[in-house]
Image 1 (cartoon, helix red, strand yellow):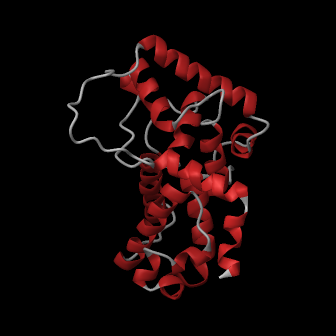
Image 2 (image 1 turned 135 degrees about the vertical axis):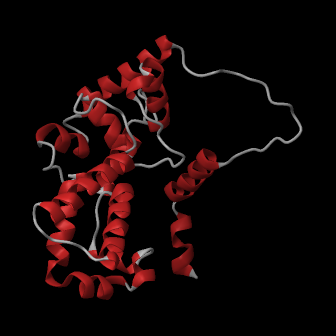
Length: 229
């Protein structure tokens, strides 16, 4: 009991709990009629938001590890981690920037809808990568990170079959798609992850090893390089 209660003796931890509650708490008013407060950004507001983001990228490119890798490494050689992407997403939320991926996405859409795809119903942390690449003009269209990973996955599978002459069976393809989906949301894959959902529901690491043998590790490394590198 003493060990379990020990963290709550620290004021910093208690404050953290209060801050988390404040950020996530929702008040549902089912009696007051809704009224429209705003219909979105004006073009001037959108320009200001985008300008703030571009200013952030310039000022923090040597401080935030994810930006250091993006700016210093060519595409395909950026081995980003989920922790680094989380740090980046949290950094843009801090004053004086006070941005979110959702606000940025809507701002870019307001400025040029033809170059911005819907971000999707899920608020994926990895979408911040798409925003950075779009701001740096590495890509012409702002698309959800999952869409980019899906497109690269299809190209990689085609290359494996047409160029490398390697054809995966149905069960192997199911596993490759699970790995692809995991990378699209988590950007990295450790072998411990094979013991988590959804992999464990399909036999976990032992099943993956059975299907791919000694090629499992180089296969995962190649998928990380191609899909999210």
